[in-house]
Each structure stands twice: as structure tokens, then as C-alpha cells.
Image (tube, rainbow, N blue to C red; front, side, top):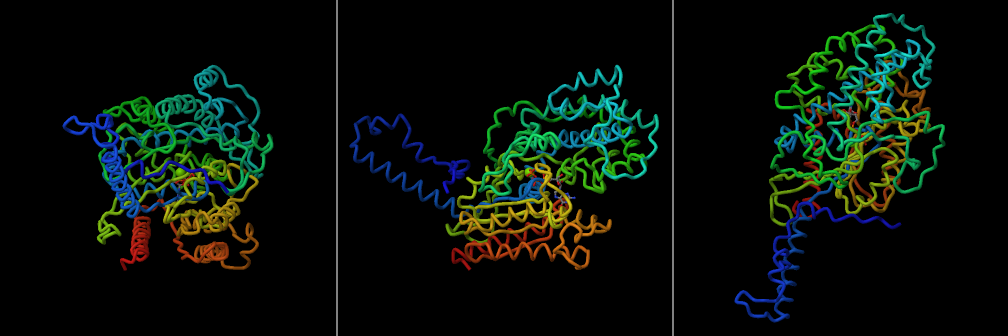
Length: 562
Ligand SMILES: Nc1nc2c(ncn2[C@@H]2O[C@H](COP(=O)(O)OP(=O)(O)OP(=O)(O)O)[C@@H](O)[C@H]2O)c(=O)[nH]1
Ligand SMILES: [Mg+2]
């Protein structure tokens, strides 16, 4: 197979100062310092000596560079794990970006409320007061608001929003209709304003639009038929680099540097943050609607219908299926003009990754590397996990040392986080997803997708030398699902009569992944798995420290320092 080559990553941080002097035009006319023509052989020798020094410097640089790749399905927790890394190991930069997250979290909140209003709207008989996702995507908010204000037209319920469960419906009243008319137009405007502010760094990504839906990055996918595309058009905000989105704060000099491997860095002049006094339109508007939003979210009938729909609002925009950790529960704190973003808000904020973002972390390991230096660098690649983006992973398989694969703890969850390094690959497998399906292809069970992907990653000779760390992620959601009485065996017949509790489900999934790892790996390598909830920053800090220490130990051992 031909692997597309990418520009060597060292170019982003490696400074080739001496070679630049060789290439200095002032030195290229072969004139010596005293104006005499230099012997070409001397110039040649100088260039060669310089190239040798640069090559040695590059080798030194590489020898203390550990590349990590985060791999896994969409929404498995890859970017959330990267946030944990950054929070832990580049705290200064993390703090400087904090303000920039405010608009992203506000956008998450607004989209959650709009999603609820859509559900409510369909329950009320399909009045079209809330601009739909497509209209909002196309920037037709103004028209939609006009329509709303002038007159709601009844068009019948949106089929995609009709609940499949035939339970008695709550009695919706005028009060509920008022939620729609009072909140809908205003929040659509706010969404529009936030979107304008955050773009061009963010864009809508129609998850179902691309035809290639293969589970692995290695094979061509099958075509989705038009029906499928139309039926399940999911649109989310996406980003290519947090730096681009969070450029409100002054840029910090820091031990971590980020390089966007896909274009977009040039538009950084357009601020994404509120003004210094916090009185930007979205902040003001959301604060002024706080009571109304809270009334909507605490309304028993609304909660009931939202629960009944099993929150068709994707957890990827901040909801989980119990809505317990939703930003809406925190609306009193968030919908304020003096809202200050905390760490938990940032790890829960959802921005879908498109392309690949790269961060470099520098550590003092306390032990000398092969070069004698005590400094170690990790380069972490965070990829977009949607099936349609997996082909883009291939160039990064070259020379990876570690993969972190977040796998949802339940048999199939796409919300896994994966972390991949050239020496280490982290694989995220969300474990809570055994009863869920891929957003990008609703025919595919998320656990099955995760297993197929895991198999292919273990099997490929391209990654044979990489260690893989499995994160059985979203354990909190799995626990909640099991507590609600969801039975794993109903979705996974092979689970059999095992107890339906967290311990046994985790053990079962871990064994499944371990067996595949052992059977498929081209050569023997260790298998490491951690149950994780990467939104729990303190427990994740411990996991990451363990991973880091293991990496350093293994690296030292492989270089005979232990
Ligand atoms: N409750 C809970 N939520 C989680 C956990 N891990 C991630 N999330 C949430 O799940 C959503 C998706 O997580 P991301 O880290 O953006 O997922 P990703 O793997 O980067 O997804 P893509 O960028 O689409 O590939 C975010 O809103 C996270 O806050 C977890 O362990 N528990
Ligand atoms: Mg991501």
C-alpha cells in the first residue's frame, strides 16, 4: 500500500539556524569574509559539515520526541483527553485560552435550547417558528425570524422528530408555545451571531454528506443512498484547531506549541471572544433570557418529552442521555454577563474535530534521554473520528509510537477518545454505546464500528511497532445506562447471562478488545487498558500521569537507560 507522506513534523519546531546561514544569499556568491572568492571545495565542505550537524541535531530532537496519536470514533473523547493533557501539562496556555471558550460554551447552550424547542414544536403540532438546522446552517436566520414573528405556519410535525415510542404525551399548553415564541427567534439570532464570530475558524460539517463510510482508514467505503443521507442529516460545528477558535486571548509564549496541519491559521485577527467588559450581544442576550431558559429546562413536561426522546439532542453538544451534566443544569451560572468559564465547562464543551490538530508538550523527565538531555517532548495528534474522516489518519501512521484508543465502555460507543503517538497510540473506545448507532451511518452499531476499527488498527503492519493504550471511556454514562436498567445482553447476545453491572461489562469489553489485540497484532506488544471518564479531570490526571510514566519508562528501557 502506498502511504501518503506528510511533511516531517519536526519542521514545526525544529530550528535549522545553522543551515540557514549556509543558504544565506550573502554567502552564496562564494565570497570569503575578506571579499576573496572561496575555493568551491571549501564551500562544499562547509555545507556538508553543516548538513551533518543539522542531521545530528535532528536525530537528537527526534530521539527525545515521542509521538502520540489519539484514535477512535467520533465523540469518543479524543479531544477531551487532549484537553486534559493540556490542562495538566501546559497550564499557562490553558489559562490564557480560557476566555476564548466562552463563546463556544454559549453556542453549546444555545444549540441545546434550540434543540429542545424543536422537540417542543413538533409535539405542539409542527409550528415552524424555530428555524431548522438547515436554515440556520445556510445563514437564513433572519428570514426565519421574520417568519416566526409575523406568523407561525402549521406544516405538520417534522417526521424526524416524531417520537418512536407510543407513550401518552404530556399536555402541552399555551405556556409551552410561549417558550417557543419568546426564546426561539432571539436564540436563533444569538446562534447566528456566535457562529459569525467563531467562523471562519468553525464550519458546519454535514456528517452524512460524504459517501465513504468504511469503518477503517484502509478500505474504500460503500455508498450511502440518498434516502439515508436525507433521513439522517446531522450537522455540527467543527474546528480544525482550537487555536483558531480561541484566539480571543493574547497569544501566550508557552512550553506547548500547536501547529495546524490543515489550513486556517491566517484569520486569527478576527476575535472570537467577548469584549473586555463582557457586554457583547450573545452574552447579554443569553443573560437576559436566563429565567426563561431555566423555566423551559425545569418544566416537568418538557423534561419528560426530552427524556422520552432519549435526548435525540446529541451528547456531542454537551448533553448526555440523562442530561445530568448538561450545561442547562448550570444555566444560573452560565447565563450571566460576568460568566467565568471553569475547567469543567471546557472539558464538556463540544467541538467536532475536522482534520488533525497537533500539540507538542515538553517535559522534564528527571531522567536523561538518549541524548543526555532531561527534556522530553511529546507530540500529540488529535484526529477527527467520524468515518468520513478516517482516511486522513493514514499519513500519521508513519513512525507513530503510541496510540490511545478511547473506547466507550459499553459494547459500542462512538464517543470514544483516542490518543495516538508515533511511539504510542492511544485508542478511545466509548463503552456506553452498546445500544447506539453511528451518527454518520445510523445502520451501524457504535460498538461494532469500534471493534472493526480496533481490529484494523491492531492488524496493520504500519502500526506494528506502536504501543496501543485503550481507554474504555464514558464509564460514567455506562454506569447511568446500566442503573436505568438497560440490559447489555439485549444488544449483545454474546454477553449472555453475565451480571448487568459496570464491573462485568467493563471486564467483558476489555477482554474482547484484548483478544483482538493479541490475535491481530503482527508482533507481540503489551496491552494496556484504562477505564476512564475523561470529563472527570482529577481521575484523568492520574491516568495520564501513569501513561506518561509508562512511556518514559519504556522509552528508557528501549534505549538501554534502564
Ligand atoms: N459524560 C461524559 N462525557 C464525555 C466523556 N468523554 C467525552 N465526553 C463528552 O463527549 C463529547 C465528545 O467528546 P470529544 O472529545 O469532542 O470527542 P472526539 O473523540 O474528539 O470526537 P471527534 O472530534 O468528532 O472525533 C464532548 O461533549 C465531551 O465533553 C466521558 O467520559 N463522559
Ligand atoms: Mg475531537
